[in-house]
Image 1 (spheres, chains in turn red, yellow, purple, cyan):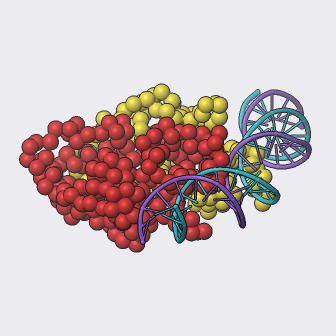
Image 2 (cartoon, protein in one colour):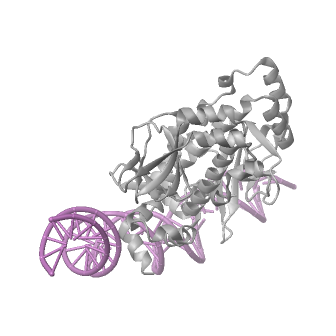
Length: 186
Length: 186
DNA sequence: ACCATCTTTTGACAAAAGTCAAAATCGGTT
DNA sequence: AACCGATTTTGACTTTTGTCAAAAGATGGT
């Protein structure tokens, strides 16, 4: 199962549980280049991307911006370490395009866990999906060349290719900017 | 929090809950080069490593063995995808040294989830730890050279350095065997 | 102690990827 | 249409890493 196959329908929530879940969520618009979360802040919300595109990134020792994830429509935005442990975030999350989110606060989400037991399972499934994604990503670094990683990226995220700067893709797949440019002309 | 700081003591289980948890676990000895899990098998057990050392690996397109993880004393062994979804494993898990494990079956672990509610939290915490580990690993591929990845490996897992083949480390950090050998002479 | 096997090192070379700077291109604004 | 800044491409070059094969070293079994 990957995130594209995931749906809340699986969990057979009662009407009331669905109500409780939905009631915690509020819409939030975010313009291109605005932040959903900054380094050092504690991630206080989960966001669901209804429309638009965001990305997360951090700065390495040499102050290069390293993109860690893209969040297009249908994604849940969450800085795992920061949200789960309510500790300061090590990364920024910033909108690439004007976006519309649906957000829920940490406190409200905690209540939902208590009121709707199925959320424990939902949460576990989402963690498992995340882990599966990351395993695949690690594998690509262990076994693929830069060119192959780029090809895989194109295959997996064709919808991102036209929408994000190449530099973001370059750092995402762990390749220098100029090298990616050369890879692209075959 | 990483796995070395994790302990079941955190969860204030009652004597009875602890009893129920422990009762599911049985000791299992495994000799060097024997398998804990083979590719294609469904992972039916979680293992806790009391003594010894194991590793997980798979074969890439060119039939290279790629090491994905090491499991020294104190680790939980679990093939996430296979155990969680009860699907055939894509990787092998094999003992590097004669090892002693404490194992619990999938069925028994599912019962424990029901009988000891705190296990939901335990499970979530362990997932979070796993995710944090993987984030760090991904970051190392995105930002570090082969030499730096080797240095980080040495710093993080000094106890493994003397105990595993260099070839295992090489594929773990995504470097050719011969290259790692050269890195090591500075 | 000896052999067979596996692991690690080394050499010579090729290919891949990084660096730095300049040029070209693209986007949005006035 | 001209301009500014950001992004992308390109050139010339260096460094890193991979490949292949052979040699050296280590290990375990008998």
